[in-house]
Length: 233
Image (cartoon, rainbow, N blue to C red; front, side, top):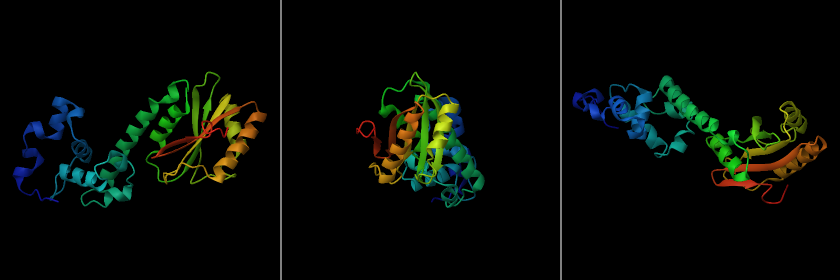
């Protein structure tokens, strides 16, 4: 990484039109590169590197891919010389705010028209996770999602995906339909035997309570798998 002890290369000595803070004030955030936006979060460099240099080092670590950036952990950020705990936490907080904004503008405000809409929502919600999450979407009579609940993390078993817990939540939220969902961080979309067994178990229990199991959707970076579309529900 280049050394910027030479004051002519220091950000404060750049043309104002090239300085990230001035650029965002004059032209708006859309005109900034990913590295420049990161540099604003980083705020300050160190004696050897500017904030821009540190931002570029971070982007290089994730192959200049924002999706990969979102998967970096606190420890991953701190492996970069000049990025300490405070800078790492600031970046991770900004990434989480972006995720939450996407989720707040999602399919939750709409009537569900197909599994692909749910899959798109789930991909945004799960895409940075490196572990498996099992969750349930609860729907009302108008086919609108009224609640999203993570039931377990780390895999599906009959214990953590207890139908009694799911149905208790469904009754509490006044749901008439549920959609089971989980991610496969490995990328493989094929349902396991455990996936099929828990789907059948929950579906049978839900029908006894006049609650309809509408689908079970698996998502990964490769796309999605719908039990309903594949004729398994």
